Image (cartoon, rainbow, N blue to C red; front, side, top):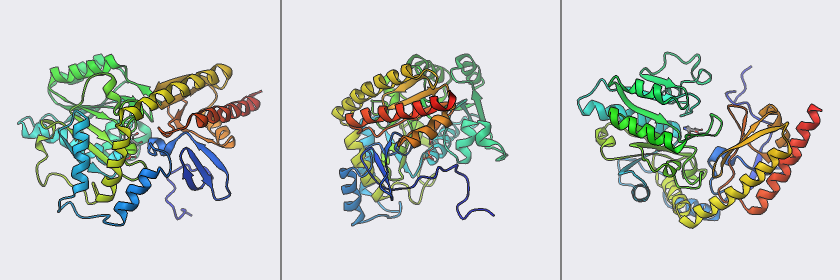
Length: 394
Ligand SMILES: Cc1ncc(COP(=O)(O)O)c(C=O)c1O
Protein backbone atom coordinates (compact mmCIF):
# COMPACT_ATOMS: atom_id res chain seq x y z
CA UNK A 1 0.00 0.00 0.00
CA UNK A 2 1.31 3.44 -0.82
CA UNK A 3 2.25 5.38 2.31
CA UNK A 4 0.27 8.49 3.19
CA UNK A 5 3.38 10.49 2.23
CA UNK A 6 4.23 10.02 -1.45
CA UNK A 7 7.40 7.92 -1.22
CA UNK A 8 9.69 10.00 -3.45
CA UNK A 9 12.41 10.41 -0.81
CA UNK A 10 14.84 7.88 0.62
CA UNK A 11 14.51 9.21 4.12
CA UNK A 12 16.73 8.27 7.03
CA UNK A 13 14.98 7.49 10.32
CA UNK A 14 15.91 10.75 12.03
CA UNK A 15 13.51 13.51 13.06
CA UNK A 16 14.51 16.80 14.61
CA UNK A 17 12.52 18.84 17.04
CA UNK A 18 14.54 22.00 17.16
CA UNK A 19 17.76 23.58 15.99
CA UNK A 20 20.22 26.17 17.24
CA UNK A 21 23.14 27.46 15.19
CA UNK A 22 24.89 24.43 13.69
CA UNK A 23 23.06 21.91 15.86
CA UNK A 24 19.89 19.90 15.36
CA UNK A 25 18.25 18.15 18.29
CA UNK A 26 15.84 15.20 18.26
CA UNK A 27 12.80 14.94 20.52
CA UNK A 28 14.86 12.53 22.65
CA UNK A 29 17.57 15.19 23.12
CA UNK A 30 20.20 13.66 20.79
CA UNK A 31 22.36 16.41 19.26
CA UNK A 32 23.58 16.26 15.67
CA UNK A 33 26.16 18.61 14.22
CA UNK A 34 24.61 19.87 10.99
CA UNK A 35 27.13 20.07 8.13
CA UNK A 36 24.35 19.99 5.54
CA UNK A 37 22.34 23.07 6.53
CA UNK A 38 19.23 21.86 4.72
CA UNK A 39 21.41 21.39 1.59
CA UNK A 40 22.83 24.93 1.70
CA UNK A 41 19.55 26.51 2.79
CA UNK A 42 20.12 27.37 6.47
CA UNK A 43 22.94 29.75 5.55
CA UNK A 44 22.75 31.47 8.95
CA UNK A 45 22.20 28.25 10.89
CA UNK A 46 19.08 27.36 12.81
CA UNK A 47 17.03 29.92 14.75
CA UNK A 48 19.30 32.86 13.98
CA UNK A 49 18.00 35.65 16.26
CA UNK A 50 17.88 38.26 13.46
CA UNK A 51 15.80 35.95 11.26
CA UNK A 52 13.50 34.96 14.10
CA UNK A 53 12.99 38.68 14.69
CA UNK A 54 12.31 39.40 11.00
CA UNK A 55 9.86 36.47 10.85
CA UNK A 56 7.95 37.41 13.98
CA UNK A 57 7.89 41.15 13.25
CA UNK A 58 6.57 40.72 9.72
CA UNK A 59 4.48 37.68 10.69
CA UNK A 60 2.51 39.77 13.16
CA UNK A 61 1.76 42.35 10.47
CA UNK A 62 1.14 40.78 7.07
CA UNK A 63 2.10 37.45 5.50
CA UNK A 64 0.65 37.60 2.07
CA UNK A 65 -0.90 40.01 -0.34
CA UNK A 66 -1.36 39.44 -4.03
CA UNK A 67 1.13 40.73 -6.55
CA UNK A 68 -1.83 42.81 -7.74
CA UNK A 69 -0.61 45.28 -5.14
CA UNK A 70 2.65 47.05 -4.41
CA UNK A 71 4.73 45.05 -1.92
CA UNK A 72 7.28 47.36 -0.26
CA UNK A 73 9.27 44.44 1.24
CA UNK A 74 9.66 42.99 -2.26
CA UNK A 75 10.79 46.33 -3.70
CA UNK A 76 13.31 46.74 -0.87
CA UNK A 77 14.81 43.29 -1.47
CA UNK A 78 14.96 43.85 -5.25
CA UNK A 79 16.75 47.18 -4.72
CA UNK A 80 19.32 45.54 -2.45
CA UNK A 81 20.03 42.75 -4.93
CA UNK A 82 20.28 45.17 -7.85
CA UNK A 83 22.72 47.30 -5.82
CA UNK A 84 24.86 44.30 -4.94
CA UNK A 85 25.03 42.50 -8.27
CA UNK A 86 25.28 42.77 -12.06
CA UNK A 87 21.49 42.78 -12.25
CA UNK A 88 19.10 45.58 -13.14
CA UNK A 89 15.95 43.76 -12.12
CA UNK A 90 14.66 40.89 -9.96
CA UNK A 91 11.65 38.57 -9.88
CA UNK A 92 10.91 36.57 -6.74
CA UNK A 93 9.95 32.89 -6.68
CA UNK A 94 9.44 30.31 -3.95
CA UNK A 95 12.14 27.88 -5.05
CA UNK A 96 15.10 27.25 -7.31
CA UNK A 97 13.18 25.23 -9.83
CA UNK A 98 10.71 28.06 -10.32
CA UNK A 99 13.68 30.34 -10.90
CA UNK A 100 14.79 27.90 -13.61
CA UNK A 101 11.37 28.07 -15.26
CA UNK A 102 11.57 31.84 -15.45
CA UNK A 103 15.22 31.89 -16.56
CA UNK A 104 14.34 29.67 -19.54
CA UNK A 105 11.17 31.63 -20.38
CA UNK A 106 13.03 34.92 -20.08
CA UNK A 107 15.83 33.82 -22.42
CA UNK A 108 13.41 32.56 -25.07
CA UNK A 109 11.17 35.60 -24.84
CA UNK A 110 14.19 37.88 -25.15
CA UNK A 111 15.00 36.46 -28.59
CA UNK A 112 11.38 36.21 -29.67
CA UNK A 113 10.94 39.94 -29.03
CA UNK A 114 14.23 40.72 -30.77
CA UNK A 115 12.88 39.16 -33.96
CA UNK A 116 14.88 35.92 -33.68
CA UNK A 117 12.17 33.41 -32.66
CA UNK A 118 14.35 30.54 -33.90
CA UNK A 119 16.68 31.11 -30.97
CA UNK A 120 15.06 28.77 -28.46
CA UNK A 121 17.79 26.22 -27.69
CA UNK A 122 19.24 26.07 -24.19
CA UNK A 123 22.64 24.45 -23.69
CA UNK A 124 23.38 22.80 -20.36
CA UNK A 125 26.11 20.60 -18.93
CA UNK A 126 26.16 17.01 -17.78
CA UNK A 127 26.12 16.50 -14.04
CA UNK A 128 24.19 19.71 -13.51
CA UNK A 129 21.04 20.11 -11.48
CA UNK A 130 18.49 22.86 -12.00
CA UNK A 131 15.44 21.56 -10.15
CA UNK A 132 12.59 19.11 -10.63
CA UNK A 133 10.16 21.08 -12.79
CA UNK A 134 9.81 20.24 -16.48
CA UNK A 135 12.28 22.96 -17.47
CA UNK A 136 14.60 22.01 -14.61
CA UNK A 137 14.91 18.36 -15.61
CA UNK A 138 15.12 19.20 -19.30
CA UNK A 139 17.93 21.68 -18.60
CA UNK A 140 19.94 19.16 -16.55
CA UNK A 141 19.07 16.22 -18.76
CA UNK A 142 20.47 13.35 -16.67
CA UNK A 143 18.67 10.00 -17.00
CA UNK A 144 18.10 9.81 -13.25
CA UNK A 145 16.03 12.99 -13.45
CA UNK A 146 14.28 12.51 -16.78
CA UNK A 147 13.60 8.77 -17.25
CA UNK A 148 9.88 8.10 -17.52
CA UNK A 149 8.90 11.75 -17.60
CA UNK A 150 8.87 12.22 -21.34
CA UNK A 151 8.08 13.82 -23.61
CA UNK A 152 10.55 16.30 -22.20
CA UNK A 153 10.40 20.01 -22.87
CA UNK A 154 12.11 20.32 -26.25
CA UNK A 155 15.07 22.48 -27.20
CA UNK A 156 17.77 21.43 -24.73
CA UNK A 157 21.29 20.22 -25.57
CA UNK A 158 23.71 18.75 -23.03
CA UNK A 159 27.47 18.87 -23.22
CA UNK A 160 30.07 17.06 -21.14
CA UNK A 161 31.31 19.13 -18.18
CA UNK A 162 34.11 21.36 -19.47
CA UNK A 163 33.56 20.62 -23.18
CA UNK A 164 34.53 24.01 -24.62
CA UNK A 165 34.91 22.75 -28.20
CA UNK A 166 31.45 21.23 -28.01
CA UNK A 167 30.14 24.56 -26.76
CA UNK A 168 31.61 26.53 -29.63
CA UNK A 169 30.09 24.02 -32.04
CA UNK A 170 26.68 24.04 -30.40
CA UNK A 171 26.62 27.83 -30.39
CA UNK A 172 27.48 28.12 -34.06
CA UNK A 173 24.03 27.41 -35.54
CA UNK A 174 22.38 30.68 -34.42
CA UNK A 175 19.62 28.79 -32.61
CA UNK A 176 20.86 29.09 -29.07
CA UNK A 177 18.90 31.30 -26.71
CA UNK A 178 21.12 30.70 -23.68
CA UNK A 179 23.75 28.61 -21.97
CA UNK A 180 22.91 27.55 -18.43
CA UNK A 181 25.61 26.55 -15.94
CA UNK A 182 26.25 26.27 -12.21
CA UNK A 183 29.56 28.04 -11.44
CA UNK A 184 30.05 25.26 -8.87
CA UNK A 185 28.07 22.08 -9.49
CA UNK A 186 26.39 21.01 -6.25
CA UNK A 187 24.40 17.82 -6.80
CA UNK A 188 26.97 16.85 -9.43
CA UNK A 189 29.58 16.38 -6.71
CA UNK A 190 30.98 19.84 -5.81
CA UNK A 191 32.66 20.50 -9.13
CA UNK A 192 33.79 24.14 -9.52
CA UNK A 193 34.02 25.45 -13.06
CA UNK A 194 37.54 26.95 -13.37
CA UNK A 195 37.52 30.76 -13.62
CA UNK A 196 39.17 30.75 -17.05
CA UNK A 197 36.48 28.38 -18.30
CA UNK A 198 33.67 30.63 -17.06
CA UNK A 199 35.41 33.50 -18.83
CA UNK A 200 35.70 31.44 -22.03
CA UNK A 201 32.00 30.54 -21.82
CA UNK A 202 31.11 34.23 -21.46
CA UNK A 203 33.25 35.10 -24.49
CA UNK A 204 31.76 32.25 -26.55
CA UNK A 205 28.22 33.38 -25.66
CA UNK A 206 29.03 36.98 -26.58
CA UNK A 207 30.54 35.96 -29.90
CA UNK A 208 27.53 33.80 -30.76
CA UNK A 209 25.05 36.33 -29.38
CA UNK A 210 23.62 33.89 -26.81
CA UNK A 211 22.59 34.77 -23.25
CA UNK A 212 24.39 33.28 -20.26
CA UNK A 213 22.43 31.97 -17.26
CA UNK A 214 24.24 31.21 -14.02
CA UNK A 215 22.47 28.89 -11.62
CA UNK A 216 23.67 30.05 -8.22
CA UNK A 217 20.85 28.37 -6.31
CA UNK A 218 23.33 26.27 -4.31
CA UNK A 219 26.65 28.09 -4.73
CA UNK A 220 25.32 31.62 -4.22
CA UNK A 221 24.54 33.71 -1.14
CA UNK A 222 27.99 33.65 0.45
CA UNK A 223 28.44 29.89 0.22
CA UNK A 224 31.79 30.15 -1.59
CA UNK A 225 33.06 33.15 0.39
CA UNK A 226 31.82 35.74 -2.11
CA UNK A 227 28.21 36.86 -2.27
CA UNK A 228 27.97 34.97 -5.57
CA UNK A 229 30.43 32.35 -6.79
CA UNK A 230 30.86 33.86 -10.26
CA UNK A 231 32.44 36.96 -8.70
CA UNK A 232 35.75 35.05 -8.45
CA UNK A 233 35.93 34.85 -12.25
CA UNK A 234 35.13 38.50 -12.87
CA UNK A 235 32.51 37.59 -15.47
CA UNK A 236 28.82 38.24 -15.03
CA UNK A 237 25.79 36.44 -16.46
CA UNK A 238 22.79 37.95 -18.19
CA UNK A 239 20.39 36.00 -15.98
CA UNK A 240 20.99 34.38 -12.60
CA UNK A 241 18.94 31.93 -10.58
CA UNK A 242 19.06 32.30 -6.79
CA UNK A 243 17.24 30.38 -4.03
CA UNK A 244 18.16 28.22 -1.01
CA UNK A 245 20.34 30.48 1.20
CA UNK A 246 18.53 33.69 0.33
CA UNK A 247 15.58 32.72 2.53
CA UNK A 248 17.72 31.26 5.31
CA UNK A 249 15.18 28.43 5.55
CA UNK A 250 12.08 30.31 4.45
CA UNK A 251 11.04 29.39 0.87
CA UNK A 252 12.37 32.14 -1.37
CA UNK A 253 14.08 32.29 -4.74
CA UNK A 254 14.84 34.93 -7.32
CA UNK A 255 15.77 35.51 -10.91
CA UNK A 256 18.15 38.42 -11.36
CA UNK A 257 18.74 39.80 -14.84
CA UNK A 258 20.12 42.64 -16.88
CA UNK A 259 17.68 45.08 -18.39
CA UNK A 260 18.42 43.76 -21.88
CA UNK A 261 17.98 40.06 -20.97
CA UNK A 262 14.71 40.82 -19.18
CA UNK A 263 13.35 43.10 -21.90
CA UNK A 264 10.71 40.61 -23.05
CA UNK A 265 9.18 40.13 -19.61
CA UNK A 266 6.53 42.83 -19.74
CA UNK A 267 3.30 42.98 -17.75
CA UNK A 268 1.25 39.81 -18.08
CA UNK A 269 4.09 37.53 -19.27
CA UNK A 270 4.88 35.89 -15.92
CA UNK A 271 3.65 35.71 -12.35
CA UNK A 272 3.46 33.74 -9.14
CA UNK A 273 0.81 33.76 -6.45
CA UNK A 274 3.17 33.38 -3.52
CA UNK A 275 6.40 34.61 -5.09
CA UNK A 276 7.78 37.65 -3.29
CA UNK A 277 5.24 37.76 -0.49
CA UNK A 278 5.93 40.23 2.35
CA UNK A 279 6.96 37.54 4.85
CA UNK A 280 9.49 35.86 2.54
CA UNK A 281 10.93 39.19 1.41
CA UNK A 282 11.24 40.62 4.93
CA UNK A 283 13.28 37.55 5.87
CA UNK A 284 15.24 37.61 2.61
CA UNK A 285 16.18 41.26 3.14
CA UNK A 286 17.57 40.42 6.58
CA UNK A 287 19.55 37.49 5.17
CA UNK A 288 20.99 39.63 2.38
CA UNK A 289 21.97 42.42 4.82
CA UNK A 290 23.89 39.95 6.97
CA UNK A 291 25.57 37.90 4.25
CA UNK A 292 26.52 40.78 1.95
CA UNK A 293 28.48 42.50 4.76
CA UNK A 294 32.18 42.25 3.74
CA UNK A 295 33.14 41.42 7.33
CA UNK A 296 30.73 38.50 7.34
CA UNK A 297 32.19 37.22 4.06
CA UNK A 298 35.73 37.61 5.46
CA UNK A 299 34.69 35.41 8.35
CA UNK A 300 33.22 32.83 5.95
CA UNK A 301 36.58 32.73 4.18
CA UNK A 302 38.52 32.40 7.43
CA UNK A 303 36.29 29.54 8.60
CA UNK A 304 36.48 27.94 5.17
CA UNK A 305 40.28 27.96 5.37
CA UNK A 306 40.21 26.38 8.83
CA UNK A 307 37.69 23.71 7.85
CA UNK A 308 39.46 22.88 4.62
CA UNK A 309 42.82 22.50 6.35
CA UNK A 310 41.30 20.14 8.92
CA UNK A 311 39.46 18.17 6.22
CA UNK A 312 42.73 17.75 4.30
CA UNK A 313 44.22 16.28 7.48
CA UNK A 314 41.23 13.95 7.85
CA UNK A 315 41.61 12.73 4.27
CA UNK A 316 45.35 12.16 4.75
CA UNK A 317 44.70 10.20 7.95
CA UNK A 318 42.05 7.96 6.36
CA UNK A 319 43.21 7.24 2.82
CA UNK A 320 41.03 4.13 2.53
CA UNK A 321 37.88 6.08 3.27
CA UNK A 322 38.55 9.45 1.61
CA UNK A 323 40.25 10.42 -1.60
CA UNK A 324 40.32 14.23 -1.66
CA UNK A 325 38.71 17.49 -0.56
CA UNK A 326 37.20 19.63 -3.29
CA UNK A 327 35.21 22.82 -3.56
CA UNK A 328 35.38 26.47 -2.62
CA UNK A 329 34.60 28.37 0.59
CA UNK A 330 32.07 26.49 2.69
CA UNK A 331 30.86 24.53 -0.33
CA UNK A 332 33.11 21.54 0.16
CA UNK A 333 33.03 17.93 -0.93
CA UNK A 334 34.79 14.88 0.43
CA UNK A 335 35.46 12.64 -2.54
CA UNK A 336 35.22 9.18 -0.98
CA UNK A 337 37.00 5.92 -1.71
CA UNK A 338 34.56 3.89 0.36
CA UNK A 339 30.95 4.15 -0.88
CA UNK A 340 29.72 7.60 0.18
CA UNK A 341 26.48 6.01 1.42
CA UNK A 342 28.49 3.87 3.90
CA UNK A 343 30.40 6.93 5.08
CA UNK A 344 27.13 8.83 5.44
CA UNK A 345 25.61 6.07 7.56
CA UNK A 346 28.71 6.15 9.77
CA UNK A 347 28.36 9.95 10.01
CA UNK A 348 24.81 9.55 11.29
CA UNK A 349 26.16 7.10 13.86
CA UNK A 350 28.76 9.68 14.92
CA UNK A 351 26.13 12.44 15.23
CA UNK A 352 27.22 14.52 12.25
CA UNK A 353 25.10 15.32 9.19
CA UNK A 354 26.51 15.59 5.65
CA UNK A 355 24.80 15.36 2.26
CA UNK A 356 25.56 12.82 -0.47
CA UNK A 357 26.21 13.94 -4.04
CA UNK A 358 27.08 12.34 -7.37
CA UNK A 359 30.62 11.11 -8.09
CA UNK A 360 30.86 9.37 -4.69
CA UNK A 361 31.10 12.69 -2.86
CA UNK A 362 29.86 13.73 0.57
CA UNK A 363 28.95 17.38 0.66
CA UNK A 364 30.03 19.54 3.59
CA UNK A 365 27.78 22.61 3.49
CA UNK A 366 27.73 23.96 7.04
CA UNK A 367 25.96 27.10 8.17
CA UNK A 368 28.08 30.07 7.11
CA UNK A 369 27.97 31.03 10.79
CA UNK A 370 29.54 27.80 12.04
CA UNK A 371 31.66 28.41 15.16
CA UNK A 372 35.34 27.45 15.27
CA UNK A 373 34.67 25.01 18.09
CA UNK A 374 31.98 23.34 15.98
CA UNK A 375 34.47 22.98 13.14
CA UNK A 376 36.79 21.17 15.56
CA UNK A 377 33.90 19.02 16.79
CA UNK A 378 32.92 18.25 13.18
CA UNK A 379 36.37 16.85 12.50
CA UNK A 380 36.27 14.73 15.68
CA UNK A 381 32.93 13.27 14.61
CA UNK A 382 34.03 12.74 11.02
CA UNK A 383 37.11 10.90 12.41
CA UNK A 384 34.80 8.65 14.41
CA UNK A 385 32.78 7.97 11.26
CA UNK A 386 35.93 7.24 9.22
CA UNK A 387 37.17 4.79 11.86
CA UNK A 388 33.80 3.04 11.84
CA UNK A 389 34.02 2.62 8.05
CA UNK A 390 37.61 1.36 8.36
CA UNK A 391 36.40 -1.11 10.99
CA UNK A 392 33.82 -2.48 8.54
CA UNK A 393 36.35 -2.95 5.75
CA UNK A 394 39.10 -4.59 7.84
C1 LIG B 1 21.96 24.33 -8.51
C2 LIG B 1 20.52 24.10 -8.20
N1 LIG B 1 19.58 24.60 -9.01
C3 LIG B 1 18.28 24.43 -8.75
C4 LIG B 1 17.85 23.72 -7.65
C5 LIG B 1 16.39 23.53 -7.40
O1 LIG B 1 16.01 24.27 -6.29
P1 LIG B 1 14.66 23.90 -5.50
O2 LIG B 1 14.88 22.57 -4.87
O3 LIG B 1 14.51 25.02 -4.52
O4 LIG B 1 13.57 23.88 -6.49
C6 LIG B 1 18.79 23.17 -6.79
C7 LIG B 1 18.36 22.37 -5.63
O5 LIG B 1 19.11 21.58 -5.09
C8 LIG B 1 20.17 23.36 -7.06
O6 LIG B 1 21.12 22.85 -6.27
